[in-house]
Amino acid sequence: MPETVDVLVVGAGQAGLGTAYRLQRLGVRDLLMVDAGEVGQSWLDRWDSLQLFTPRRFSQLPGLRFPSGPTPTPSREEIAGYLRDYARRWGLPVREQTPVRRLTRDGDGFCAETPGGEVRARQVVVASGAFRHPYVPAAARDLAVPQLHSADYRSPDDVPPGRVLVVGGGNSAAQLAVELSASHDVTVASAREPRYLPERALGVSLFDWLLVSGVLNADRDRPLARRIRARGDAVVGRDLDRLRRQGAVRVLPQRVVSAAGDRVGLSDGSTELVASVLWCTGFAPDTGWVDVPGALDDDGAPRHHRGASPVPGLHWMGLPWQTRVNSGLVDGVDRDARRTAARVHRALSAVPGRQGRWLPPVTWTRPSSPSRSPR
Ligand SMILES: Cc1cc2nc3c(=O)[nH]c(=O)nc-3n(C[C@H](O)[C@H](O)[C@H](O)COP(=O)(O)OP(=O)(O)OC[C@H]3O[C@@H](n4cnc5c(N)ncnc54)[C@H](O)[C@@H]3O)c2cc1C
Image (cartoon, rainbow, N blue to C red; front, side):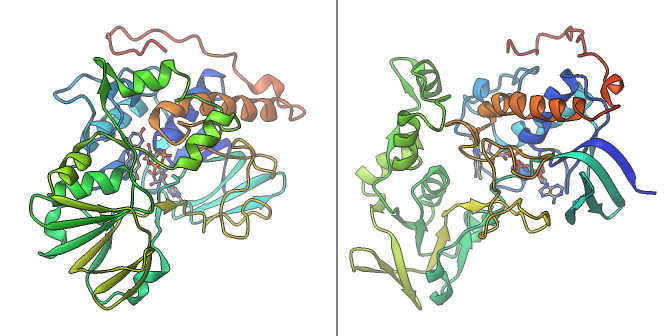
């Protein structure tokens, strides 16, 4: 007999956990979360020295304060540990090592195929991460030197000695170019001149400025948000710019347009001789397992309006720009999670004969430790 639940959340990263927390608060009890790996795993799968660019206070979910630590921003181990603590603290029903291999329509609901059997659910929240499929430009095919995507990079030992071209203009490219500059001859090719933002200004953290100025939470449809999106990711911190000015790293505001052997062609017509290439060129979500008519567009990207799929009962969480500037960041999860949880709750409450199954919203006992976040 397949297992049946009211709500299945696929993915137990920050987006899945934050949604499950809000669902529980609305009194939704028949809830299952499944994750292909372990809670926090996606952070541990990133490079060894990864340091979040968001300060601790902006790296937390509602209901649990991020612990203080020796650095202003958390390491990948700290955020993974925090997410594990979060799942435990709120008793979120996570089943680890349970990948959904295929999600299909099943009557009014859905059927998720997992190695342990089928799970049927009335409502499904897909929170499986927007940064899963490494993207590399087509030119990569024509390279004859070692190349790596940032998703597979762990430490400078992974990059052969000599001249490395780091391709990308976001925070990953900046962090890795700085790290590699201690041991390699580094050139950065970024489609446009990177925009550097200081970590602090006038003694106040950048993220506090972004919060009070309304930038961080700006709705995606506001002109301000549209302008920010059009300008592309900014780099938090000035380390790369400092190295560039010292001549320790070259930064070329050029797009990679071609490659041949050990030469990479740039958009200004010049070529760069390289010993290796590190692609920091972004990701796409992995939606290959979603086999639900109408759920994806022709490119396999989620079809949605602010996280709501046109397929009734299907919801997306954790998509960059889902509703706001910070939808893809830890800090942005809660606003979207409240909205998604409310939509799921409404849909369940509307099912005839199911109203009395819902427990009233839970009255939470405040944990006694001081670690509860003020939000
Ligand atoms: C290099 C890098 C640095 C970043 N730094 C920051 C930062 O400093 N601050 C910040 O706020 N944000 C940062 N982000 C953005 C974002 O916060 C992270 O990507 C974060 O991991 C997204 O959380 P998520 O829950 O949406 O997805 P994920 O963390 O990817 O979690 C998704 C989960 O879904 C599971 N899953 C996937 N497919 C399936 C399936 N078919 N069945 C079951 N489970 C499945 C995975 O195992 C995974 O555990 C960064 C992103 C990257 C790539």
